[in-house]
Amino acid sequence: MRVVVAPDSFKGSLSAAEVCAAVEAGVRRAVPGAEVAAVPMADGGEGTLDCFLRARGGDAVEVAAADPLGRPVTARYALSGDGGSAVVELAAASGLPLVEDVPPDPMNAATTGTGELIADAVRRGARDVLVCIGGSAGTDGGTGLLRALGVRFLDAAGAELPAGGGALARLASIDDSAVPDAVRAARFRVACDVTNPLVGPDGAAAVFGPQKGASPGQVAELDAALTVFADVLAARGGVRVHDLPGAGAAGGTCGGLVGLLGAEPSAGALLVAEAVGLPSALAGADLVVTGEGRVDGQSAGGKVVSAVAALARDRGVPCLALAGGVSGPLDELHALGLTAAFSLADGPRTLDELKADAVPLLTEVAEQAVRLFTRRPDR
Image 1 (cartoon, rainbow, N blue to C red):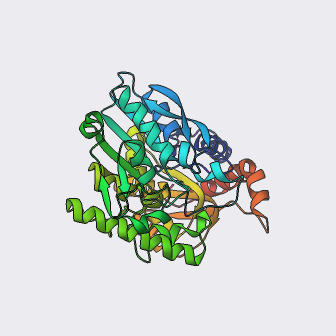
Image 2 (cartoon, helix red, strand yellow):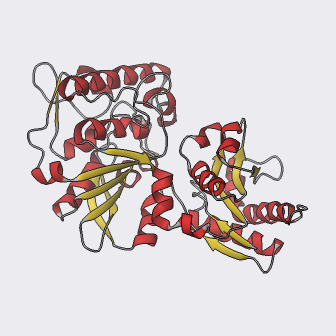
Image 3 (cartoon, rainbow, N blue to C red):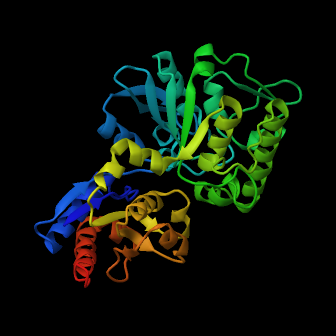
């Protein structure tokens, strides 16, 4: 029996590699002679950089940058062996965990540090830059990132706006005359983990703002500010990102990159799957086991579980998902190819308890799920 294990990390608990190890242990309990292929995954958020480094090699470059509130932080990105391409993970410099030590500041949090990583990569010769944008702390439309690359965001008097999404309500014009030629010549791709538009009821502020500490009033202000940003982008270049699928990823960072740098958005999980060789690993597989911290209706919108399920479906391979929590409806996931989903919870537990016992719980539920699978009449 050949089993492919291809999960995302369980954020705040286990890395994707640690999830693979726990699931593999459960598979071997159920089928001692099984051939198990571990393929740690990510979807463009936290952990994506490590997946690329593991699969493609290259160098991890450390850079002094700004965190979402402008404080100094050391972050890293991946540079290919020949220096021609780079992978930048937004969460490394602009992620929500970096500001968990202070009260939320959703109106002023910015993506400046991510832009500093990109600028460093371009200075070193990278001309193909993949920006993995899950897990952001702010809702600034990527303007902090773009500022670090030379773009200026001005009010009606020609004064430069302060950092953060809230200030974009006063945006009147954009000046990109100081953007270096090397940046203009680079190809930018964006690995998105969601398909939300930039603005509106399903946009960056409405859906993800509360997770970053925004009150209902601040959500409304941020959505209005991002709408102004999108209007100015459209007026200056004809690029309309208001309702572009994925433009709302990472507080609208995808929309800003598309609108000003011509970036190419892609489903992050599918990009990672290709990079780590998941399609090849699925050849001859009898079962695929994937998973993430939580499986629910949103998982169908570009998360690892949906990408792995779709790849397995296309090859006629059953796909199981293991998660800390499972809640329906899962109709879209089943349509994409997910056979079934199982929760780690073995009874009433707090989230902290689930995280603390994640390894033994994963091993146990993996064993039981695979035992059930191997008892099918056609097995």
